[in-house]
Amino acid sequence: MALRSGHGTGAGQPRVEVLPPNELPAPVPAALPVPDGPVARRQNGTVAGSAAARVLGRKGGLEKAKRVRLIDSLGLRKLADDATFRPYRDAAEEFVSHHLAELAKQAGGSVGPAPSTMVASAALQLAASRWAFDRGAAENDAGLIKLGSSLANDSRQNLLAAYELATREAAARPRGPVDPMARIRALAGGGGKA
Image 1 (cartoon, rainbow, N blue to C red):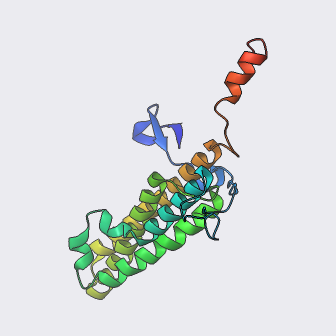
Image 2 (cartoon, rainbow, N blue to C red; image 1 turned 30 degrees about the vertical axis):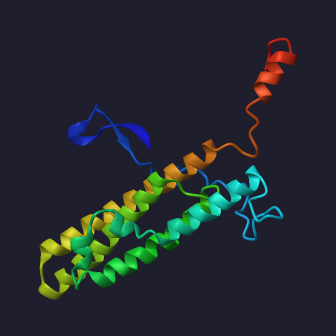
């Protein structure tokens, strides 16, 4: 996102805009992949420590995220149940899964809830756009074709914003283990300088 000077009728007024594709931040590689093997356990079957518990929690969260139907969670069940829209909705759900996986590769290995919501909205906008284009062409309705174009543009903006936010979040994440006591030890042993 960038603060830009307005133009046209909004000249001189500052406005927040999504960066154009050539100004987006560079992708951030993933720090560490999520382990896909078994979680370390003690003899009695309990989790072997806090590190193993974190791995187990992350694996569970990723599995739950796969099952959540993002489109339904946006409260659009009525439109989604429309028989003519159903194939477009199904394609939108596939798009969300695929795009979030690709976005995670460019954003440090994971995508937060805000960019995920933007991608889900973009998928719905794209699906509705394709539905409007198809219905507009079948019914020779210029209004539906214009709606399809507008929704496609909105989808593009949401995807650009999701990429920007996901890469900024990835750049802000700590790299490697964080020791909260390191600064205190440095202050205590180093004469007050950290």
